Image 1: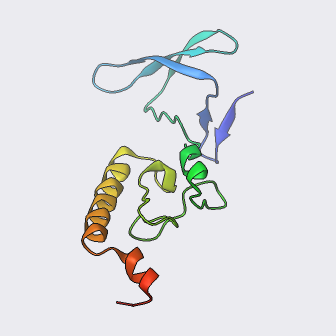
Image 2: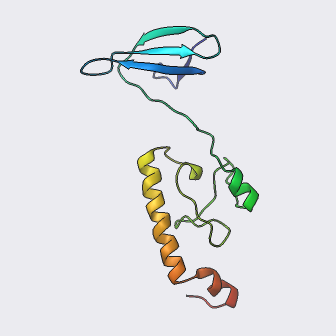
Image 3: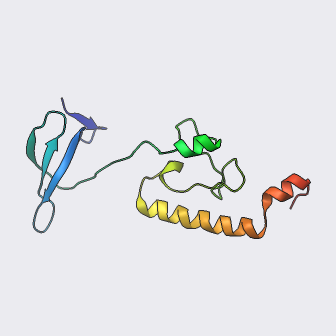
Length: 132
């Protein structure tokens, strides 16, 4: 049974590997292998979207005591700070768009926050009771 994404008639192909993307000037078809049924087939298509690793890898964060959202992503503020001083997050573990360009941008934001926080350690100010 083929499942479809929303009402757009886009098939979701579970347990399926794309072995080959074929076409000259644009994508025309894919050669697929189902790793459960061990069947291979070609499918005519106009585009390819491949999703892997959709579940966030947050095991280390959990072991450290980092808070997670209800959806299992790392809970953070607008500076990518977690509930633990000195522990930051960026990329797919934060939820949102699962795109490399987004993750790279978030990594740059987190790096800038780390730099700023090292220059002005907010956790020391909280501990001493002063506010900025």
